[in-house]
Image: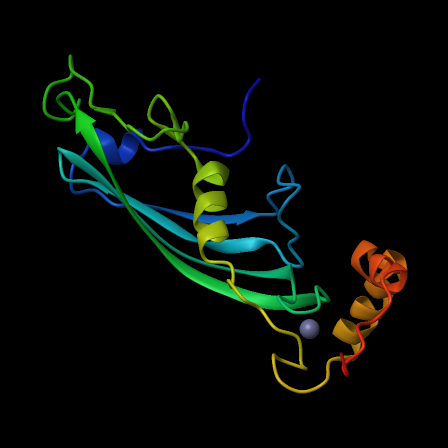
Length: 178
Ligand SMILES: [Zn+2]
């Protein structure tokens, strides 16, 4: 099946020093664990030194995350820069038409199909590591949070009496005088 998100980097790989640029907009629809309010948008550039393929990018998205305290849904802007480099092997075809430079990424997960970058796979990783780690709703950590209180009350109601509290009732309290 042909992937829609493949970016052919041969223009850069076969012509070291030549920069290619691509405007990207993706909703990362295959990512069930990411909730985007707006598409992830930005620019990717790729240039080869001959031995290394350098990829840079500048991206932004608006995402839904959970408040770290009360798990209320929050909208946050995420802005991040991409800075990657991958080894390149072989002679660029612009130096010798019978040769061909090939990117040799040694990532534990596939990021390339031949010399084509799997843009969404790359963007997904960078977006996830740039998500806010402890997002907080307007109530923050301090002060009363009505959402957190309601959650705590509901949990307490569901759990009911703890086994320890039930056991305590069976044992008569000690007489402090003896
Ligand atoms: Zn909260």
